[in-house]
Structure formats: structure tokens, C-alpha cells
Amino acid sequence: MPPVDLFPLFLPLTLVIAGALIVLGFEPFLQRASKHRLLPWLAAILLVAAGAVQAGAPTGSLHGIFAMDTPRLWMCEAIIISTLIAIGGLQMSLARDDYPGGEAYSLSLFGAAGAMLMVMAVDTLALFVALELMSLSIYALVGMRRNRRESNEALFKYFVMGAVFSAIFLYGAALSYGATGSTAFGHPWRDEAHRGLFLFGQVLMLIGLLFKVGVVPFHFWTADAYTGAPVAVTGFMGAVVKVGGFAAIGTLWLNLAAVASGMPIPGVLDLGAAVTLNQTGKDLLAHYNLAFLVLGLLSLVLGNFSALKQTSIRRIIAFSSISHAGYMLLALALPIGEKLQLGSLWFYVVGYAIATAGALSAFTALAGKEDINDNLSGIAGQGRARPFYGLLLTIFLVSIAGVPPTVGFLGKYLIFQDLVVRGDVKIAIFAMIMAVVGAAYYFRTLVAVWAAPSCEPAKAGPPVLSGWVLAGAAVLTLVLIGWPNALIRPDPAGAANLGLSAPAAPAAEQAVLPTGLATAATR
Amino acid sequence: MNGIDPTNVQVLAAVLFALGVAVVLTRRNVFLLLMGVELMLNAVNLSFVGFSRELSGNESLWGQMTPLFIIAIAAAEACVGLAMVICIVRGRDTLDSDAFADMKE
Image (cartoon, rainbow over the protein chains, first blue to last red):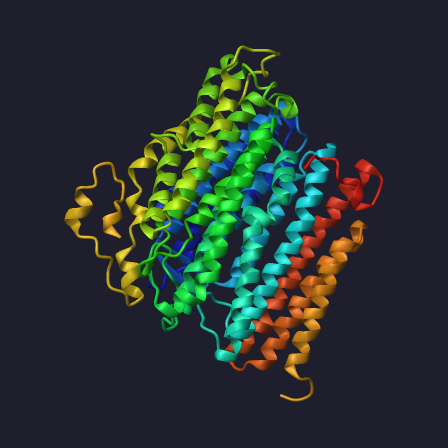
């Protein structure tokens, strides 16, 4: 990767953090009512500016500590959009509850900045600082309703477990440093005596990150943390933590593959690039691969079947997020051939983040004061009472469920296609069946939303911000389906920098892809 | 390089880390949980510093610098943790973590 200057690379991030600081600075000087009228708009303006600047961000690496490339750019955009959606939802929720403080807007911007740094980090120290910036903000957001028992309990469980797993991640980073002599990703071990230490360190780091995204053996916090948080925050954390976490896991995995295959110090890997594996590398990574597949399948089963039993919407979303983490893990599986490329993962993550943040933000509008309607009987008929938000919720849930023509469908399709191409046909079929099981509880929720009203409809009068933002996001979940190629295709420039041959995708073949679906043949 | 054998430093760090995990897993008092987490983080610091003595030149530098970042972040984490303790003690009047198990599995 070419070097890049500090200022253009960090300009979007600077805008997000400036937004957080400005909001925090103004907050004490405003009346309670105007806090929720003014601050979200301030935050939204800076976020929109950050999103606009981010779209033109330069690609390259900053001293081998941070990097930017096409998939990272898309994920940063997804984080900015999810945060914008969450700010809209928070405004609606906090104004309705007459919440005394406006710190939540600032905290979510800090959380977004942390997640963006996580996406960009290519060094374990930078990754750790970013991870903590994101986590600490989200802990505070989860415990926002200070007087509610379940909110306190969720905060307690999430914080203690989160701190322990951060420490485990960090110990893995220390061991990897000892084995390689560098905190950067993609350094080979010093000598054969240090290989075991290096691999053990990488496993500890992976465990720390898998906890953050809520994959099965480390999923126990998900349901409680999601349920204890206010609905708008649930959407924010579901979206942003997944993007940051999977970007970090993917960075680690690609670098591990490159190091294991004995590539001369790979430097900063483009996330869209294809890493060439040799037999040594494959043998070394076989156990990791098996672990990803097994944990992915376990997450699918446990997440989907637990979600079927739930009645609380937030718990349904929590368990469904476990199952989605399962799909994303399956996307990490090693190829039968030589090239490891994670395009389908990036596309899935981007689509999932926007749809999840949108679904819970739209649900905020229907959830009533202090999210009192957060169960299937409480939400019954709310869609008829407020059709605009009901319709938006429908679009987002349909996308999460993976029904065409939404971005969620294309994401799942690409992952299944990858699995089939890799030769894991049975796993692909099993995952498809699980997707159908998953669709069952999303549609159960939707049926409830549009059923005959059984109780008082939620109070109207949401501020305008959320309506605009959500409508935009809904359009995005339908429109993004046209651009998978940007993420699916290995970036030729990145591949060239690695000393690899450019991906063998003739221009003619790209032109005949009718709906933009990448075909198996081009791999 | 003289004095302590670098392997011993790593063994000590591993033991301290395991102790931290054991404290978090077995103790019920909220403050002891937070202390267990601190112990884990400091074990990591020790491990970094130990490795930096083994390495030389630029490589050694990273191991000396990283603990400074970790110390700062551990302090921030302790702030959030103590704020959390105040929050939950107001609600339930106890420091026993078993009291926070109302939510169904």
C-alpha cells in the first residue's frame, strides 16, 4: 500500500470526534427540552460531513499503524450511517422519556470513532486503543437508564465480561509481540522456537475479538446487554460493534494466512486483496478453519432456535445477532483453491449494520415511553397506528431476514455461494435451512406489528431527524444490492502491492454480470 | 542483559494473569472483580516489558511503549467501572454480584 498523509486519512474521524466534543461542550448550557432538539442535529450535521469526506478518503497506509482501502472505506461509511440512524432513534427515545441529559449523543459519536479506528487499525496496540474507545462508550450507553434494574444488571454483566476479554485479547497481543518482535499484524515469528507462542497469542486475540461480536461460546452476554440497553442503543451497538469486530477479525485472519504461507513480510494488507495460500499455510490454518466452521454452525443453531422462543423484540434481535455472527464466521472459511478473499464478509457486514441499526431505530418509534411495548403483544397493531415507521421496520427486518430484493439477501447469497465454491456444500445447505428458520421469527414479529391493535398505540410526535434518516437508510438497503462488485472483487492495486498477480477476472466477464452478482467463475 | 532469566518473567506474568482470571471467576464482591481485571492487565504489562528485554533495538521499543498505553486505558476502564459500581449500589444496596442475576437466561 502507498503511504498516506495523516490529515486526509483522519479528517472524517476528526469530524466525528469534533462532533462528540461539541455536543459534550454545549450539553450543560441547554435547557432539558432543547437538549434533545438541538444536540442531535449538531451531531447529525457533523456526521453527514464526516460521511461526505469519508467517501473521498485516500487509500493507503499510515506508518503501518492505520490503513484505508475500499472495504475499509465502505465499513467506515456503514459505521457513520448506523450512527446517524442511532442518533435519530436516540433523539426520539430520549425526548419521549424526557431524559435529563444529552450525553448519549456524544457517547455514540465516541463509540463510532472507536469503531472506525478499529476498522482502520493494522497494529495490535492501535486496535486495542480503538477497541477500548468503542467499548467504554458503549458500556456507558448500555447503562444509560440509571434507575432501571435491568439496565444496571446488563451494564454489570457486559462490563465485567468485556473487561476480562479485553485483557485476554491484550495478553494474546503480548505473546504475539514476544514471538514476532513487533506489535504490527503480519509479522512472521522470529524463529521456529517461537512459532507455537505466536499461534497461541493469535488464538487469544481471536477469542477476545470473537467475544465482542458474540459468537457462540462467548455469546452469553449478548441477550442481557441487548435487552438492558434502550432500544435505540441496542441497534447502535448491534451494528457498530459487529462492523468493528469483524473488520479486526478479518484483518487478523488475512495477515495470519499471509504469514503462515510464508509470504515475505506482507506489510499492510488490503482487506479486499486475495491472499495466496500455499500448502504449509493451509496445514497450519486447518485447525482455525475447522474452529470457524464449527463455531459458525453452533452460532447459527443456538441463535436461531433461541430466538424462536423469545417474545421480547430486543431479545429476538440479540439472538438473531448471534446467528448473523455465525454467517459471518462461515464467510471466513479457507478456500479449496489458493486465494483467500473475504469480499462476501465485508458486503454482509455493511448490509447487516445498516439494516440492524435501522430496524431498532424504527422500532424505537413503536416502542412507547421507556420502551414499554418491547414484546410481541405490546407491539401488536403499532404498525397500523403509525404506518410510516411500521413500513420502515418491515423493510429493515425483511433485509435482515434475507429476503430479496434487499441487501441482506445478497449478502447471504454471496456467503452461500462462497461456501459452495469452496466445496462445503453440506454446510451451505445447512446454513440456508437456518436462514429459513431465522425468517420465521422475523415474520412473526412483522405479523405482530401489522396485526389488529390490542392496546394503546405509542405516543406520536417524533422529531423529524429520525424519519428522514430512516427513510434514507431504507432506500439504501434496497439500492446497495447494485454494488457488490466494489467489495467482492479483489482490488487489483492491493494485489499488485503484495507481489501477487492481479486477479484473473477478464473485463468481458465483468461486463456480462447482469444484476451485479459475482459469479463463481470469476474467482 | 543480566540478572533475571526472561523466561521467569514470562512465567510470573502468566501466573499473575491466571490469578486475575481466578479472582474474577470466584469472587462475588464487585470491587474484587475490578481488582482481578486490573491484575490481568498488569500481568500483560509485565509480559510486554519482559519481552522487550529479550528483544533489541526498535523491536524492544514497542514493548516499552505499549504498557504506557495500557496503563492509561486501564485507568479509564476503572473510572467507568467505579461509576458502574455507584450506579448499581444505589439501585440494590449491595456489592454482591450474585444479586445481579434477575434477567432470565
